[in-house]
Image (cartoon, rainbow, N blue to C red; front, side, top):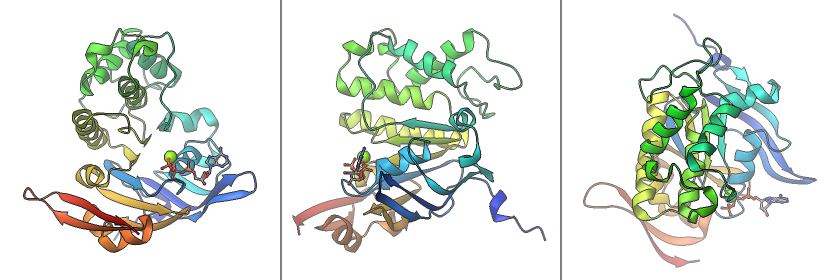
Length: 282
Ligand SMILES: Nc1ncnc2c1ncn2[C@@H]1O[C@H](COP(=O)(O)OP(=O)(O)OP(=O)(O)O)[C@@H](O)[C@H]1O
Ligand SMILES: [Mg+2]
């Protein structure tokens, strides 16, 4: 019988991770169950819980200690450029309103760090950065295909500086998603979006995650939306993991009371999806 060495197992393994600001610790000795390729994890928790701090730390922004391994490879020991190739990160802040078209901004992100060849049949550009450098046309086609996937092809030639907040958020998402990184981390990608775009974005992120075998972590506050699209939910409070599991396992009225100080009901709607009804702030 072959026993898989835990260290070589596929996916993202976060163990004993700590980080903070100056001398103030925020995340203390955090360990997550292994996050498998092709799965979407929703990272939820109250304001100030440390969600953005954790994502930024994993993305290499901050003084993170502990162990972070992707497919057995220690990400913290990789040179910055190599780590950047494996990780895609969309921060909570909107992309700046610069005089660049949406399409150019996505091409720029692909040129800065070439797309990963995931072997999936999506999009048009499939060249691996190592084996065959992308031709000049590839980033452009890949960028345009990504805009089409998230439903903003019509914004391709608009300048970022002339977009609405939600449109700029969608452009930022396209910049992160286009590369199909091994680990895709999105900090509140739907916070500025209308109801339709929230659903489209989560559906497409979940689909791209499965199709390209990405380990995707999405920070969000809409728990019902998270429950609908995430394979698992990680709940953070005060820099510590409070719960982890499938949405139905992790999200309970008791957890919501403990973590958010609210009295809430977790119910199943007539079509079977999980709904949260908040009755009181405690
Ligand atoms: N640059 C910083 N310097 C010092 N402290 C910071 C900094 N950024 C965040 N913090 C503090 O770290 C803690 C965690 O903040 P973080 O931004 O990670 O929370 P969050 O879970 O993302 O919250 P939100 O849901 O409001 O985005 C908070 O107490 C915050 O005040
Ligand atoms: Mg945040």
